[in-house]
Every structure is written in structure tokens, then in C-alpha cells.
Length: 366
Image 1 (cartoon, rainbow, N blue to C red):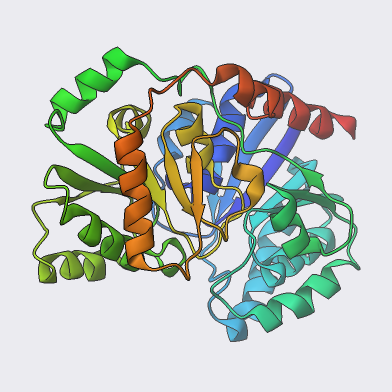
Image 2 (image 1 turned 30 degrees about the vertical axis):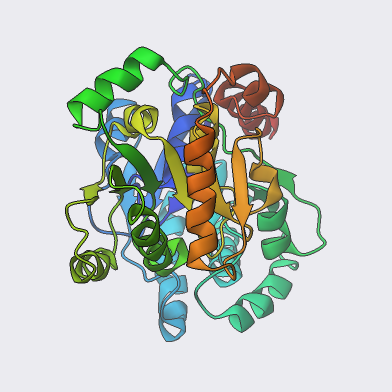
């Protein structure tokens, strides 16, 4: 039995955490066990499921990115915690998007006595200090680690020209298969039957660019009275976005659904998915939506690797709100029939069973 300790900010329902859980559900738990070291003291959406599968969760309250002055204290707290846990684990798997966090976490693990350290890059930029990232990116080269990334851009962001392994953000394709009957049922349940449903899933933060999304939808709905916008997620900017919706007097057309466990069903009922992020790694949500052949309009800041099928459309964030609105209208008028994409998703490497098997082989090597 190989024991892996995953280092994460939280186990809330977000892309990075959802990927880890997808792997956890599909890996052979008689051969590899997962436990979690979490820096957020709040209970995560996946905590109960982790416990039900035999996993442990350790809490260590650290501010991993925001305050550089606290990083020295954080480093010693993490090292102290890992020193206690070191003998129990063969792997320390760090999930991060900033090189400072990656370097300090990896160094703490090495000094605590954990020889096999994985750094897993989940993004291609940051809202935090990029100069600090560049400094620690160089320092990261001096630590012996296994370099993982969700895609090419995320790998180059974290490791530069060093070699790294791409681990696709796979999903359970049996759970994300378009079904006309399911679509009809969820649309009736949500009172969407006569609506054109514009969907979005993402944390309410600067990266996800909700402010721009609201402007685009506001423009689109002027000529489409049946249009509604469905926003799934939580986050620090949610109240600000809600206030903007009220100012624009479209609160009867914009629905804030919070964190949901039935996102895969809600995708079935949507007509289009709009995702104008400032940056991304390789978003799990866009793997999910493409598996369901849901038309997606995304920003061109997102890696081309995510273009899995032909039902994805790109626009620059420098394009006008009107151009984005026009693109939604184009998809609206096109009204394409959604098809089964299971074969292409598997061929492109997004079947979670294959991804879990790939990771399992790596964990079992040493």
C-alpha cells in the first residue's frame, strides 16, 4: 500500500479539488491511499465523502499566498506538521498555482523527511505578485521534485523549460453524457422549459471575470426576452456581482444557485456556457461541458488544449461586449443538436479511469 498526502487549500467543490476526487474515486484504494493536508479551517464539500472512503483530513491553518511576510512562519508550521507525518507517507502531492507556495511547501516536505514530492501546477497565471512567482520559479529548480501540470501552459508557468508530466483533468464520462430525457426533466424541474439558459460555473473572484459576464448577458438579453443567466458557485465577489445585477434591474433574469451537487444535471438543461476567465490552467468545467457537447464561448486567454470538440468558440477579452453578445446570438440561431462525444473525449485522454491508472502506476513505482 502506497500512502499519498495531498496538500490543498481546501476540499471545496472547485475544479482542482473535483479533479482530485475524480482520481480518488477511480484509483485502486487497496493499492494507493489518499489523505489530505488542508490549509482552510472550514469544512469542505468533499470532506464527508473522503471520510466515507477511508481518507483522513489534517488541518493546518496557513495563508498560502496572500501575505508574503507570513510565509516564513507558514514554512516552519508546515515543516513541523510534516515532520510528525513524514513516516506515514511515501508521497507528498502539492496542488498549487504559485511558485512561492510550491517551493516553500516542497522544501518543508524535504526537510521533514519526505523524499517523494510532487508539485502539481493547476493554473497558467495568478492574481498575486508575478515577480515573486518568477523568483521562486527559479528556486524551484534546485529541489528534486516530480513536476506535474494540468496542461502545457500550466507547466510552463510553473517550471519554465524544465520537463514536466501532463496529467489531464479527466472526468467520469458515464456521468457526463448528453441525454435528451434528462435535459427535459431538469428544465421542467428548474422552470427553464421556455427559457434560453446561459450558464456559468466558477468561483466569484477576479479571475473568473463575472463583471464582464454580466455586461455581456445584459446586452444579449435586450433582444432575447426568454434569456436567463444561471451562475453556479460561491466566493468573495458574489455580493458585489449581485449588487450589479440589481443596479441593471435584471435580477429576475439572473439566478445565483450557489454550490451545487447536481451540476452535471444542470449542464444538461443549459443552452450555452459562457466562460470569460482572465486566465486558467485547464478548466475541469470545460472538460465537463464538452463531454455533454454544450456549446461554449470562452476567452482566448484559456489554453488551446481545452478545445476538445468543435462546439467551442473563442473571443478576446479585448473584444467588445457587443461582439461577445453577437457570438451568443450566433450560437442561439445555429441551434445545433447535441451529440454523443464519449469516444472523442476518451481518445483525447479525458477518461478519468485512464488518468487514475496513469497516476496509480506513478505512485506504485517507488
